[in-house]
Amino acid sequence: MDADLSDHIEMCRAYAAQRRVGHYFSHETAALIHRLPLPVHRHPRLLHVAVFAPRKPPQMRGVASHELQAVGHRVVTIDGLPCVAPEDVWAQLSGRLDVPDLVAIGDFIITGDEPYSGEASPLGPADLERAVRHHGRRRGVRNLRLALDLVRFGSLSPQESLLRVELVGAGLPEPELNFRVKHDGRLIAMVDLAYPERRLAIEYLGDHHRTDSDLYRADIHRRERLASAGWNTVFLTAADLAGPVPRAVPLIRAALKRSSPDLFTPEIGVSHE
Image: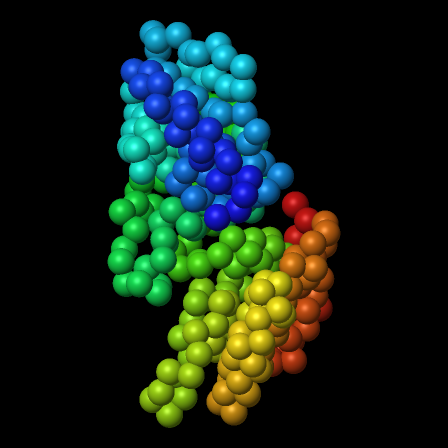
């Protein structure tokens, strides 16, 4: 566990030990408790604590207090810490995060690690829809609605979600998530993003893929297996997702064009609306 995250959770435990009735962790603090993929720049220093009206919110140093309406909210207890439920936390963050980050969190909420473990997330799209309806008048609700339309089951990392949103926003076809590639009836790879009809695989490589020799070799072998099955693989890193116009977009556009030149015509372009 990251040191900053660990410190924040310990602060939560110290606050919860005071057994303040009707106090629930919310917003960014609840996001960390639920292990939602909160962007690092939004990791909180203050504890976000909420109460339901007519209780009065706490006035304490180191605490960002919130007064909520009880109707429509759901509360849960995670490892002994009382907090607002994940779908409501997602909605609470709508005024603080942009659409791609909200999509990444929404993907995480409805997917969990089911593609690996086979254990379904307890929450689904209907829970996110309920949260949007309940929080329909809050600041940031437009972003929340836009994000809801883009949330998909199957993403296993925020980088996969952010990349998918970038590609779709650039006018490219929507890729499939964690696609299982089979060759001669045998599973040869599960790739992060894929255009199966173009036999194009997209893999996001974090820094640990560079520093871990076993992962590095596995990446090479996976690419060789895919190539032998007629697939082209594009590897991307964090640098390819950075900037107002991520380098990943033209890379994938070019790879798609190579796989099928007639997929793109001069009339098809990128919408900037």
